[in-house]
Length: 377
Image: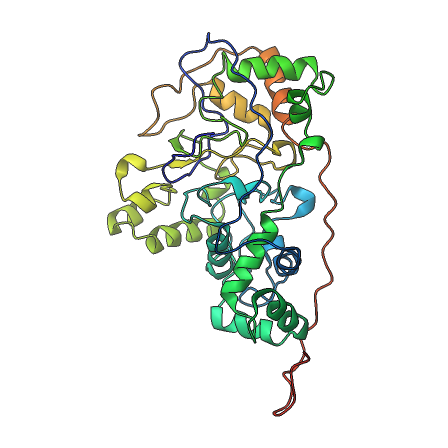
């Protein structure tokens, strides 16, 4: 997998190449071990603290929304709605991406707005239509939980919980959420288990890496080039009927600094253009990983497609209309059998069953000790 990539944004579930007669590429292997950043090394105690915080709604504005509210373990660490639920009283404007294997992305969010899981956790918890949390309030809430006071002291050596350490703990937990190759049929097949992949999935791999050209953008163990592409994904039908979604989309445009003319003319998601301010990047989104697709419908940055077959049909047509649409995005001429084989292959990139991940019992809030008393060390 390439190490040199620009900001990564994508709703590319298939990067479909112009050259289609090529021989199938060598199968990518399983994901490599996750490497923690030097300033946030992992430990069992830090991961456990992060697991608790991932489920804790006290890290939000009104104490109702946790990371797990939009990244549900039973739903592949995502949601089933096209766009995320958002903070109470709002609705998000983008699909909630799975946290599985997010540790391998170089940039996070569909438009690559942040470069680390730590920054992603902070941005989501404080974002107005996500967690809507006030940093000072969230940090004080943690300090009213004696169990957190003890855990933060043991992990980080601080007298009181600090919010920046909360993001580090959540990130440490998320770095453990990596597909188990022993549970992934394709990984078992690559490792030498000839019975792990059905004949249909094997034909699908040949199409994926050959005629269909999907591997042009979905390369390497992550099955993502981590680049940006404008595919012309159709507008979500709900966007024209759901007032809150329209309000959020327009507010997002205003907050991200679009011109007044752009704000007045529509509510389209500009993707990478928000970061680069380059109109040539309009509608570009990071290529997502194809791992765990079976568990993480719907698909694309706006959840426009409910099934993998719909995604394949879209790319078989040559994608949609986009000003920056790549020249290699062309109709494929796939047969129904081809499409069924591609679906079989894509499903083989997911674990047979997701690991059980029950919600933890969260430690209770307690009043701070009286003056002169200690906090329960």
